Image (spheres, rainbow, N blue to C red):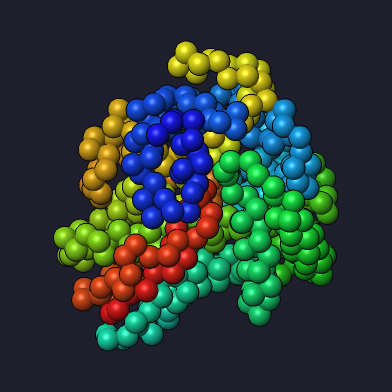
Amino acid sequence: MDSDTLLARITDYANRPDPYPLYAELRDAGPVVRQADGSYLIGTYHEIAALLHDPRISADPRSSTAPAASEETARPPFLRLDDPEHHRQRTAAMRPFGPPHSPGRVDAMRGEIAQITKELAEAFATGRQIDVVDDFAYPLPVTVICRLLGVPREDEHLLQAWTDVLVTSADLGPAGDTTERDRAANQARQEMGGYLVDLAEQRRDRPTGDMLSDFINEPDPALRFTDEELAINTILLFIAGHETTVNLITNGVLTLLRRPDQLDRLRREPGLLPRTVEELLRYEPPVHMRERIPLVDIDVAGTTIPKGASVVLALASGNRDPKRFHDPDRFDPTRPDNQHFGFGSGIHLCFGAPLARIEAEAALGALIPHLSTARLVQDPPPYRQNAMLRGPRHLPVHL
């Protein structure tokens, strides 16, 4: 097939269960492959790494020469901003989450995360059929992010409904008529943002020890969010705080059930859990692609990419690049020098990575004792529609 259809084929739902042969085709055709829609697709590790650290490359969709397609393009969260504004908003978002201002917040949740995983896993009796997503991988990170932000659990269903709409609208793929999708996303964004800002306002001058309280009571005027920034960035934190972790946990269980030898080894050597999570982030990452936009004409491996063009970095392809990783299609928890793109790279490296690692280790550690006689009910399982945030929608397992 023509290489200029690769993005269309990668994002085709029929290829969701196994896009990796297409990534291999991309690397063979690359490093830079121009697509029929005018975008540029890159799937080789070293080129991706260089671009993620290149200040001439923008994360801001407003840098595109294409016309704005949605409300999000006009007002992006800090994940899709460039410095210096990215640095200001990212710093404001991080202050109540991690070092240097809140160095103990994530570590302090270890016991709570362990207790949540224990309670969820206690319901898994031998002979029962479970859905790893609905019964475990989803409730854990959603509970954690709700407690961190200060969202009442009884309202979680509201946020999840809005999140589903927003995640669908954020997918990458060939251009098409997205009018209805964008309209639904704009409505969900306004409703969810309004809810979160209102919740934060209830805590102004009455902090309750959560991140929404910290945001609304920020003492430094330079780091204080406007209402618009608060809405956009708390939506981002809620979605990023659980969607990717759900995929990481579910992809992990699926990978281990397909490899009983590795599952048995992990049962015998629980000390391998941290390295297993790192290998899962490389081998079956929760985020497969990111879009970037050149601020000037740039040369990548002999190809000139014009200013304002859409550049799709296939992170999952880079994670399987044989020029960077030995035997990249083999799942190896003891793999040395595992510098993957599981959490991105450069200034937009995911600052929630430490929490995601703790959640994934706790989840797999709690599940492994229940998986010794487990079998997949359906393989491949049904996948989510989103090609960028790739993971099973359900994972039925008979214990």
